[in-house]
Length: 236
Image (tube, rainbow, N blue to C red; front, top):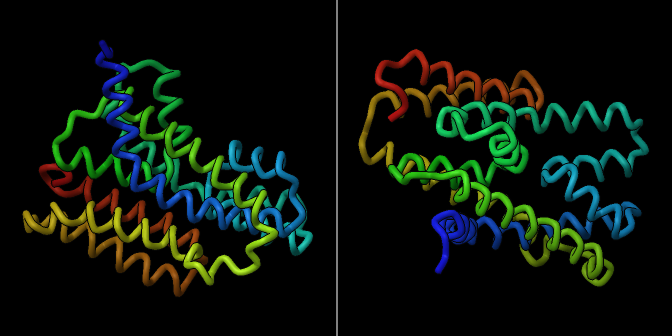
């Protein structure tokens, strides 16, 4: 007879299935690129385990190809992935009192995709437990590792990943998660949700014209959070 914790963990894994399917494609493409810049299989595995960020890993490969200095690579990847700190902060209230190591485990493996699944579940009123989050995060983490290694193994036989649409896998996954997140607020037609969405879009568009994409994303996130906090009644 399965325990409650195991059942919640399994439910988190099930919720992660769409993300895992997307990770197979984009992770494989990442492995192909990583192998192309001269990384060995163990280096690809280490990069996937320690960095665990699609955009960050692609950027690392691009900078390695340009022989960029290590400090510039570190700073660039830090800026690109700084948004993960903001994402983690936005869900900390749901895991208060759960223990330091439990929350570190959740925050360390939280990605854009798993955050989208998590916040969609929260918006739908689902009771999200620590075990559920671990199932969601660990499943995505392991699939990402396997996909990267497979890309490194078989990448030499696949010279053009874009031909098979692998380069669009991450974009398609983002679009699906975004639609799930905005579907409920738009159906409710809450003025607060519309204001937050407009603030994020306007800030992102303006920011992309004035700054780099990374800074624009961080700025849009902060503006969206600020609008949500200043609006009475909390996020709808």
